[in-house]
Length: 105
Image 1 (spheres, rainbow, N blue to C red):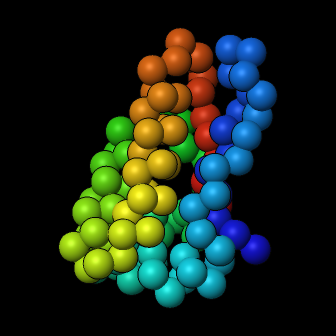
Image 2: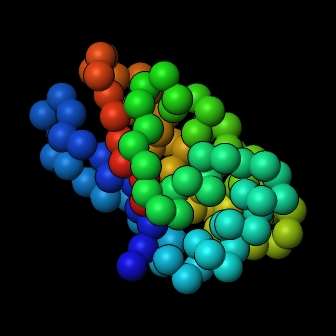
Image 3: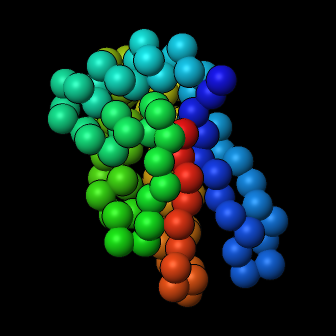
């Protein structure tokens, strides 16, 4: 199993999957950071949850926090993964889709 961002088909772009981590890696690396920083969305992503437009900024902020922590801990590959997710979520937030919802899990 793995944790990924599932991007729906939008504005003519096909549905796509943005990998975040294997389930084992998410449990070992991402969950402790989420616990340490109190990142509630990141904790939910381990099991999977939909994120609507209204919550995108909060989810982006949590990925930014996790990415900075990974970079400070010398885990640059995880920080890069967080950056990819942030950029994808920011791109989605700029769309005109009124009922935007993505699944992360």
